[in-house]
Length: 520
Image (tube, rainbow, N blue to C red; front, side, top):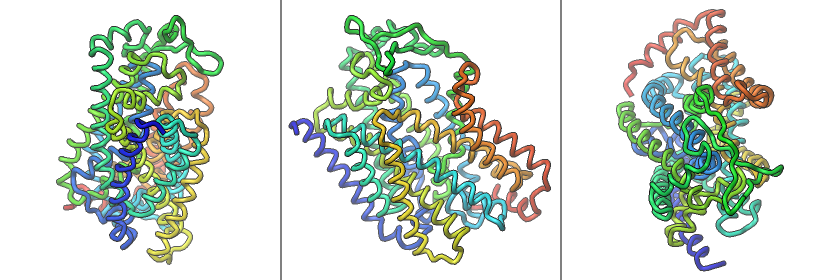
């Protein structure tokens, strides 16, 4: 191994050692009971809640997927996605966080999302719990695979190692870490990883801009690419039958700019709707120790998201100006962050920056594995199949399921040409459409009932697959992101079915009113 690569590896190993130390530190407390393991005993402070929510949400997608989109297609697709996510982040913290923290306590002290829905609607037969648990398992398996793809791409790019071997090694590390410390370790490490991520983004952007000759030079280089710097147009890389961009006279070839109208903008910004349904963020709302601290969390989390998202977009643009022909496929373009860091920085600093990608991946995949395993063990195994299961049995089942989910995610990640952005977009749409509408109606509409909740979940989940696989390929006006139509279909189903069926019980309505003012 070359000296520079060895120094990068040393820096990353030091970082990983710190993360493992956090897991070991929290292991004893996490194993005291399932509430500590899954929700940290509702003890998160405002800074930890904010940073861990955003770090677990963004994943390697922020440092690889989003810069890759900007590098490949230019400004529009990446920046409208970022705008939608920034708005969604703020609204979610502003309206959902405090109400969910209160309501989850009233709803049987719920410690998982399926728990909350089932208790919120006073289920005897755990239909909602079963549906939501299964949906979590399905979509988090997809999410986990995107994290493992990130690990494989990162290490194979850095060290020239085999992608599959590196992906499996990364998956094994994540499983061991999550196995140890549970939610508290996950949240504490996510706090550290959020700091590493934002520092890494800012440093790489700064070094890249300087190396490219300054902002004016970057913009000058990119203006020659049709549609690359437009808000209402999109660049069109000219590719061969294998998806490889063509090179002419030492420069990448682009076709005429594609249209990027208001329907496409609305579709892209609908990424922000996903926040209302993603369990990894909603659980942080449930876990914060005091409702009054959510105001600080909202400000901290929103500032972090805005800086991180727009730095990620800018890195993709700077990367294209600096290395226009280095990455010639959509999948390869997701390595632009790594190339900038390793090319422009001292190996030890580059190693710390590369740890930013690893940080993003770990912070997300441990969340996904923990939530998905809890959906099975706590909600399906104990909630439906074996109601007298002990806490210890539930936690062992959780760990077994965690390993099985990781294995399935690794199998999905075997394809080296996987595009992280596309994998994440599908899972994000799944959670946004199945859980987002019913979460909002559960918190803010007294008339919603169990039948409406079931209808909304099923309609939203089904429409994600239908639109993605059958309707979106038609193109044209139907080529919009599946989250938007699926979210709307779920919303309509909830309203119509709730109004056509009996209203919720008086007790349920009283709990709804109590959730508005509960001291917490």
